[in-house]
Amino acid sequence: MNLKQLEAFRATLRTGAITSAARALSISQPNVTRLIKDLEKSVGFALFVRSGRGIASTVEGRRFGDAVENLFTGTDRLKETASAIRNSIHGEVQIGVTPVLVYQVTPHAIADIHRDKPDLKISLRVNNSPGLVDAVSMGQLDIAVVNVYRKPESVHVLYQKKVKYVCLLPQDHILAKTVKPVDLKALQAIDCVAYDTARLQSAEDNWLKLLSWPQASLSAFSNIAVASLGRTTGKPAIVDPYTARTMVALGGVTSQPITQRLTSTLYVVTRSIDTLSLAARELADAVIRQLKLPTD
Image 1 (cartoon, rainbow, N blue to C red):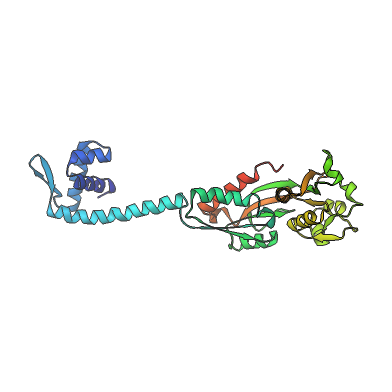
Image 2 (image 1 turned 90 degrees about the vertical axis):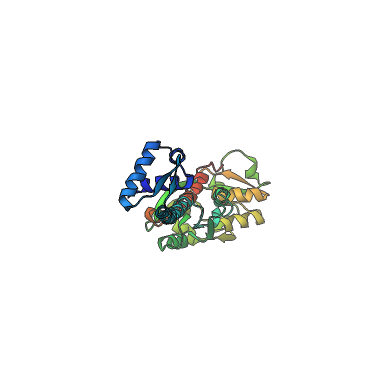
C-alpha cells in the first residue's frame, strides 16, 4: 500500500469513474486501474465492482474510503501548515534597534513585511547597542540592528554597513551656506553640542581627538539626544546620517558632510543562522535592503 494507490482510489471514489479519476490525477486510465488493483491485493478485498458501464464502490470500499479521507484530511492540514511556515503567515518576530533607526530604515522594513503578511506578529524593541547584543545572544530577540565601533563577538552578523557621520547645522548658520564639507577644526571655537566623554572614550581614537570640545556647554551620549539638542538650541552637532535625515525632515536644520573621516558601523545580528526562522530571515532581508539604500 502506498500513497499513489490511495490517491487513485480516493479520486475514483470521489468521481465515480476511472476515466474522471485519471483526468483529475493527470495520469492515464490504465495506470489508475493498475493502482486500484494493486491496492485491492494489498487490503485483501474488492474496492469496486462493475455496475453497468461504470463501477460502484463496495461496502468494504466505502468503509475503507472513510479511513482514507481521514488520512488525506491530516495530510492536507500538514500541507497547509507547511505552506503557512513557508509563507510566514503565522508566528512572531522580535526585532530590536537603537534609537537611531526608530524613525529610519526599520519602520519601512516592517511596513514592507506587514503589507504582504498582515497576520505575522512583529514586535519592535528599542534599546542601546550593548543591551540589544545581550538580548540577541540570550535568545530574547530574533534579530537586532546595532550601532557600534567593533564587531560584536557573541552573535552572528548577517550584514554590516559603515556609516560616515555628518554635521547638523541650523539653516541660517554660516557653514550651512557653503557647499564645501565642514572641517571639524572650524568648530573647535564654536559652542557645539558635544558627546559625553564616556561615549568618546568607547569610540575609535579619532573620535576623542576630533570631538573633544571642552568649551561645549551641552553634551549627550546618544546620536538622537545630541541631534535633538542641536536642533532645539541652534548649535552644530555631529551625528550619523540616519539621525540627521530625521532631524532635517522635522525642519530648521540642514545636514552637511564633514572633511574628516568619522565613522561607526551598523550591524544586523542574530543569535545563530540555525535558530533564525523564515519570517525573521525575511524581516532581516527587508532591513538589509533598506540599509543598502543611499543615506544622502
